[in-house]
Length: 501
Image (tube, rainbow, N blue to C red; front, side):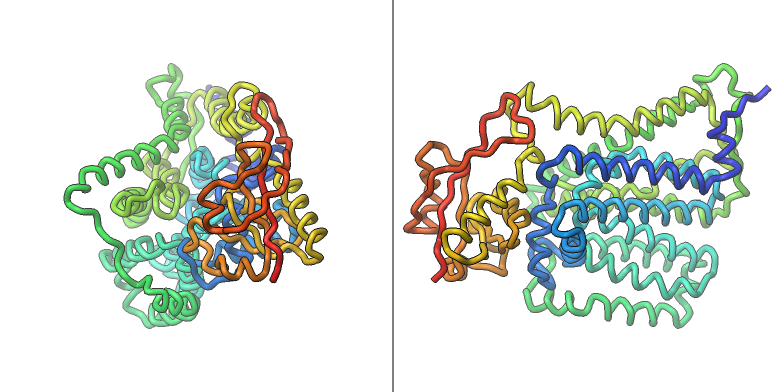
């Protein structure tokens, strides 16, 4: 006699309910954790806000859309970082909504839920998804591109041609990885009979016009900035090192799938003595074209994007792991067959909950335990609000003007850039190509604060900063407490005011 748990029955009878509960639960978890545990933003969020504040059409960091949206979310939240965290989780929800709709159209609702539950175990969609930036925004846009592409070539829905170019254009405004991804989609459509049939109409011409209109401002900047040159390929002597880097990037992608691999192993038939009694999740017979669509876009993006990153000498997969691995969960479901047995239900459910909770436990350990066990700094434990308020208020008290710019130590300057009440411009004086909207000459004219990590109680500036800003008169260093100090030393920040001319 087969025993079927309530969860399995809900998957079969109410797949939308399970999808909503799983996605909403994970989104709520990764919205609350950074709000409660982080006193400064994770990853490159501070840099994203610094770039977004300037509303540049393009920068050395890439297309502008993610930076603009981060600044809009930050302003709408009353200049609180909560708005950026919320935006990151909106991207997560939209990504999985598009994935569920795509899976439902290919394998049906119940198996689409299994694909969503498997995809949610990929570590790229947990704590890295909190740090909003181009790679996080690219996930829902790529998911929407795949959804609308399937509606066109798999379901023959011509109205999807209106949505596909919009999603594709926004993806081009988000990440350089959009170019190889969209090229892959075009190649797939041109290589298949259904794809060629879709391309034979006049709709692709309309799509090209829409994409051109969406990306026109950035394309103009791209041409004027002399960025329209192909990146330099590695020298022959460096090919071996780049291939080794490709292997490491591939290993990183494989590690992100360890949770999914664990669930597949737990559900293996060989480990279940009562395999014939497992409840079954059925789907209609699958079209071979649908199988090809899923496998191509599950396997080609991680191979292609990791190879591009390796050839360009990048340390991360182009476009981000979440984009590269988006359809792997759906591919596993498709490969499992028309009938999927959920064996050892209690163990399988516990394993899924363990995989989902592991990243949250790791974040809790880093935030609450690491300060007491080591002296390595936790970047999210820096008191950004207190730092920004101190330097903003002191500059205005000394000069009678709001703080207009901040320079010096990149990490501290970026925190002040978003946390100070006046939201000053950030000048990365050591790498000025990353902040082209501001220069040392303009900094000396508008005035601002130069900050650095003080090595002594006198607050002597480092030699490189003193060289770029001659005549600095250092103030008494300011000491700040971390959110959890533990065994870490106090944060001592040296600073100097450059008065407006």
